[in-house]
Image (cartoon, rainbow over all chains, first blue to last red; front, top):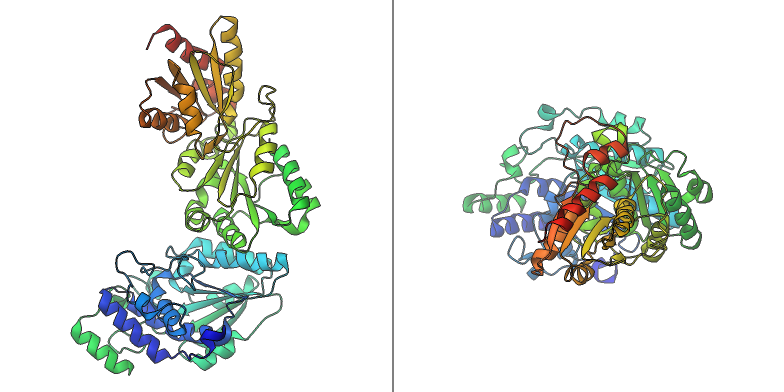
Length: 260
Length: 306
């Protein structure tokens, strides 16, 4: 982190509170996804990602609210800007826009991030430049065929400067992933295709931070972060409906009291 | 045209190490020289066009200038959303190189006929579309414009062509006009040979035409079109593409937008879905996109006053 941001310490509790507050104010959903990735983002942006040389891509663009809250906490955007979330004439839509400070790529259509990340990683290698590429994707994104084109490519080309983090919350828009497309065994599959597969508790910031330090020479890193959709709010946890629903007044108060 | 593309690109890459060439496993007996000259800047990404488009956006973000090579249908359509959300949305210098626009792949059949690629690219904001008429234009267009900041679609024919009348002239956002007359024939790059032959034959009959080569489809050569058509009685567009969304549409939009009083005939591919296939010459002939077909179209407007 650069000078202005090292002084600030990211807090998962603070980020989760902001997620609930902003989604309530804007009356917009995707809360479950944002809470699912909150700890991953806190770990990544507490020192793992060096903005001078590293690139972060939020492939699951619908969790952008969590990233906006992190950007605001880091001071990369103001809290006044955060308050424009999903308003008119805003840079902070449901999905991230690269014109906003701290966002490298606009996403929102699923399955693009791994390919974009592989392209950045390959370009860094060609140019002999340092830096890692982190792509955060959802487990349901594995349904997209283009993800597998990227997985095969990065494995073949041994892009060991690329790390894909799987937000493995087991849920997608309409149902649990196991009921839609069963993804069990994906760790072995990517391993077979030339990746190093690791598993980590996606809500343990310390464990995540240590896990992100791992490098496997000649192999891109596939970090399966086991998460809970809606993490931190009991009535949202593992509930498919909280992929889309906004909160009402009672739910808002209860959610904040549970987060602390 | 493909070999000229590769030869010019090798030369450019000799002086500019930002250039990389990606192919989705196509270009047998064409791309090898580039791979030999610049092995570290050549990647066969496999049969994976969608990945190729996003890879290219990622690479362009890091300062490279990636060329993405495939048959025009696959190059323009299979990774279309990746191109839209990547290179177009971020305005990155990704170059799609579509080989065999129109019916160039002949008997390969309709999956290989690129008849709506230009329409798809025209609706994307800020994308340069270049359809050269011959090797000279391929060379000029590449050398002068490869480093422009916006994304581009380069539509190449398979055959080698050379039109001395053009002498390799190519200007971004301009028409190249050959001759003058009361009737204008506006040809997309690959139909230039047909248009020039028709001009020669009509000249022998005492009918004068201006042939305008539209190799720069986007940015549109609007000013040149307005200047050209302001004094013409009729205009015939000819393109190996559906008449919707391509050159014919571009000219129609220009005429309507500027209130020009010129009569317009749009020659393009009108085959219904499910037609038989055949050679490029056969398919062009069936759609009136050969010398006889264009002669007939010109005679219709030449004999019937507007």
